Image 1 (cartoon, one colour):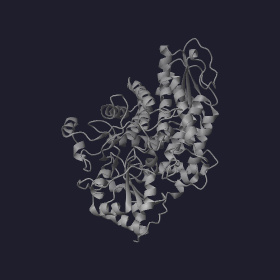
Image 2 (tube, rainbow, N blue to C red):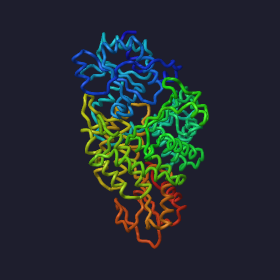
Image 3 (cartoon, rainbow, N blue to C red):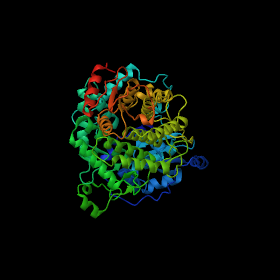
Image 4 (cartoon, one colour):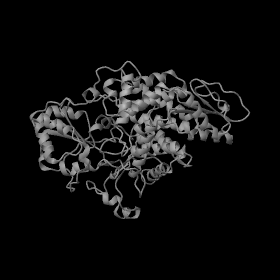
Length: 600
């Protein structure tokens, strides 16, 4: 195998490496790691060196092993010291780099030439012998490799349309079903986890008036399988399982997983009334409160997979609470990022809407107000941390805008809608790419920012939701700007499955379930109607509470009659129901109206 073939094989090495036996921990590397700075490229040019980026996650077992085993190896260290400028970045701290190389981690290893061109991108743990061979080979032949993701990174032309073509919609729908494991649940691959967009789409399709039974089965299988990832002692969800089942856990607990699982299990409870799902949501909530919540009521980033960094902790996580604490507690990353807090705020709101946690909504509000005060920027935006080296980042602003929308829907407090609009306006002003899509960051550094698929899915859905609640055409146009990037052929069909694009496309083409409560907010019946509306299991919805004392609704597109007592109205794009006075009649009325609508 020649060098070109060797690097290509190494660059796309399977993540099954992550389930290999652990190496014994060794001395931490003595390399003088540097932070990411554009000035390193000028130094590299002057000294005829390369840039070696080690993009890690502080909670990641194999990142620890890479540091202890590979970078402490004398041959590797000598090659780096002679020919490379070593740069180490925590991907949680730099969302722009994390999003750019998330397909390669963690750890992700990227080597650049002095002009900022990628020579090679390597995935996961690299043993020292292989690493040394790669480093030597690059010195001999530094020509960049053209990667399989080249077109995805650089689409030839952004679509002029804002919706999936019929062909691509059918293709992605087929992939959605084909990539599901109908034996074990989850995606049909060795790693088992709950892909949030896949489960959300499956729940959505199972609720449609056609009642997609296959989608319902997919949701149930994955939600039930992922129960095995809930830590029986502390609660919280492990990141994933290997070996094609749900029993071989990787024990890190990261905030994105906690927030996604909490939100999805709360939603699944509303869909199915399966008490196991509500119990799972409560277990995650308990873990976050006990381990990932600061004294101020805001949320930390993650807990390490290892008690001793670099050593597998399977035996440790078999222990009960007391036995674990006697040995110590794995490291917690106590950074407080706007993004992670936005995620958890939305998840707590979803739990509050089940009616099973009386203080979840107040905890979400406490966190939102802290983030506003301590991470807010002028103009409605947010920074990631106390200081950002390359921000602001789209991810933080998306997370907080969506958190504001969740708070508005759950509380009917219009100030949260005002806040959501300010942050969305900040996104539109600062992150919009020229032809379509939104960029990961506003900073134009050595690596020019580019759109990210997952972020643009969330951006399209956010702006479309705001268009529904505000009635403003500008938000619809902003949603379409994100969709043009997403439906571009090279983007839409790049990955094995894109349920998130299908969700965004579906929401852009169909009106949400629209429930309005008309009545004074101090009235107990109004409150009962509103709570029942929130409990209805539909992720794509528009729920409003019109107290006439507050003036007209933000989007007064429906004229409601004056009534002597509180009532609910269910509207489609063609018809509104008669007044509903009994909270228990809300769900049956929605279902009757849905069955009368044509399929989307």
